[in-house]
View 1: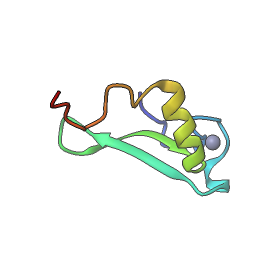
View 2: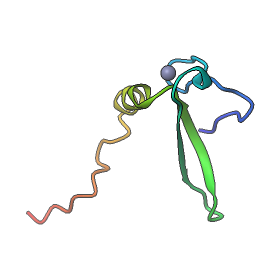
View 3: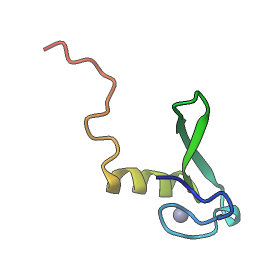
View 4: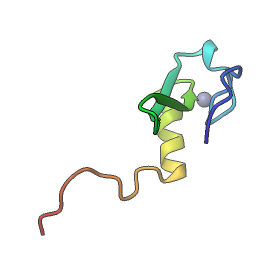
Amino acid sequence: MSVDESSDECTYCGSDVTRHDPVYVAEDAADGGRVDVGQFCNYACLVQYVEEEGLTEGACCTVDLG
Ligand SMILES: [Zn+2]
């Protein structure tokens, strides 16, 4: 998924992020650069998006030694 760079819409709620306190999310790209994957009004929208998309499931970096 990628974000249209010409858009200021929140990835979660669709509001104009520039009217709030925007947070931007990027991931490493295969070419070593960064690829924007989301933009949010604030951390509240980011957290809601992550939870609803289940993005943290199975992604914890804690090593299970059991
Ligand atoms: Zn939002």
